[in-house]
Image 1 (spheres, rainbow, N blue to C red):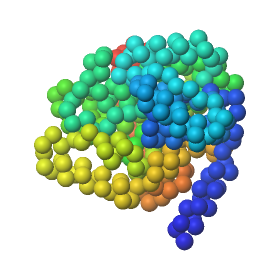
Image 2: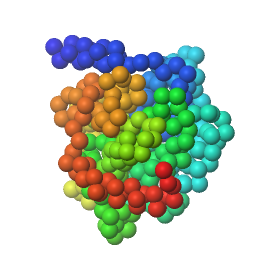
Image 3: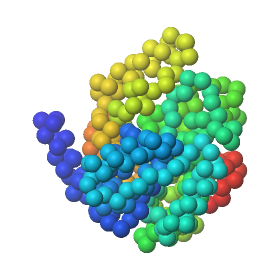
Length: 320
């Protein structure tokens, strides 16, 4: 019965999706996992998809996979390193030269659970720098192109169930004094959620021609989860916790394609709303057809969200 219900829910979800013919969609981290699945889904709906990621070799392999799965798709690769503000600025300038507008931006790329603290080229802690600050800067740089979209550009921020246990450590945003892999990861994903909500509020208040939705993939079986870099650093308890999480994702999670369904819901469903938060609708929001997700208490403080925005703008030197 559960399988039948799942098929019926999936079919109902597909019927809400509109075609995206003629639209240009940028997907960060599109060379594997959730990003690749989202790119394939957007291409199947008719969008011209730009697979943006750092590795040229992996980008080309992903493009070949997409074209095999979606014959005659309009898709191409582009170089983007979210660990470099200079790369982000160059990427945005290149798109500005080539396209009159960008219709959809999926801020998907991310790093997770780095066992040792690392920094981006600009000196930010890697997870906070790539997952949040990189996408904050990218969205700001692409704002003119997004607003040039006929219907107004759609920005999709990608959070995580981990955001519910996150906290924004304004006294140590870069984890210089206290770094643990998943403390930093949870902070970055909470920042993704709060940025998406704050962007939606500011777009409405300022009259920006933007639509913003936030998503999370639930428990998706992707390589970043199942074969990630690990987080224990020699700590047995941390190793057991991490190993248990990977086993749970492997046994009870859903496919990367299932995890990417909330992305497509946010981008193309007639039911998606500005400022809405979407994810799997099964037990614990871990698996299942996409729909409205529960915003954790940790993300509801608007004063914190406003302060995070101001700090992010100062750190990246990007103004909206």
